[in-house]
Image (cartoon, rainbow, N blue to C red):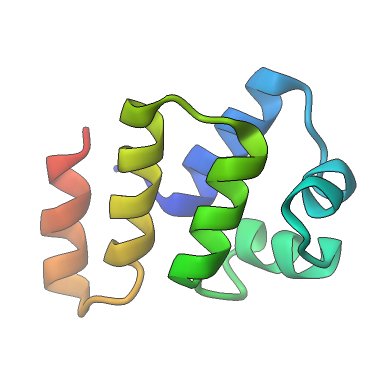
Length: 87
């Protein structure tokens, strides 16, 4: 099942954008991005919005990433349910 971190990494890789470059474009510290990608930090909605804007994601990908960010804040059983909706 998809996770926010896995999808963010996929979108970054698809655009040839590394952690530092995304940090600069999104106005975020690269260490925060690295923590989210490792699963050491849960992405906030502001974080998700900043990365979506910086990567210039199309609406469908932006919607998917936002839903996955929301899922990270839910109890485990709801998290899996929401992740299942964004297959």
